[in-house]
Length: 409
Image (cartoon, rainbow, N blue to C red; front, side, top):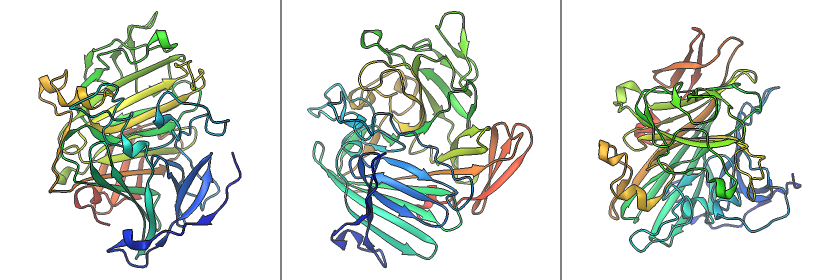
């Protein structure tokens, strides 16, 4: 890791209209990338100036066992070299994608980088404001390929181990796949992470070739297969007819992609959710969303399965990516008829130039005792979430899950 140098940015505070006590954001170089910093007693987060990638995030930083769940790509502290995609330059943690996906194919005269300008361009106007127990880092970006303005707000609350995200999209008209690309660091021990989600109505493996052997990449799951149980996914790896995607990592040497289409939920049921239980480390990472905005979860299972530059067989991570999109194919595939739209599932969000679109999202960590195993369900009460394990253990934590619908804290 390079030495971290703290500086205070000499930025205009004009971007902080409506924020009380706003001041320029602190900045440090973290794993080779200039990054904006936001912290309180429980959480410290870094978000890269380039691409707005959120990591590292330290939860429970005031404890004797702080937790940093997010993946940081292994080439970050190496000598810089040309990358096959711009998004790989800062690749780490969670980032907002607009349009989500590879975007290799031009669509309606637009040629976007992989995961869009919001994941590859420079964010500016960084200010921090404190209101009561809430601290908010605000960044912004003007998109150029399809013109618009995006505002990123990351908030933390005293006494909570949560990051609340809101992306406001203005002036960016027309259909587009979008979403969050949360990527977790993975241990090497097989089955040491347990993955569960709220109810979904369709699961499908990537219908095309996700990992191309011609590029020294390999996949293990049967392309285009449909299923309704994450523990029973058709596989094509030698000696295995199916794969259990609730127990990861597994199948070392492969990189796979699947998509789950969530069941719709009303406000009384609470948000849709995804959870990854790290039993040996004693915590659950979780994400919460509105499935009316982000109707799917794309799961990227990268277990040393890519051997070209810059991967070189060393990348081990888990993407739990909440989106509305057609897998990771990008704008062109998502706005035309495809395997999901033919079944009635939207793969793009219709943006309107005269009406802002807001994407609210929650990510956090809760510590768990021995024997917790994995999340079976999450129960919601005002300002709290209770994580119930398959072994009957209950762990409750303060979470302002109402933010998903209201956008306010």
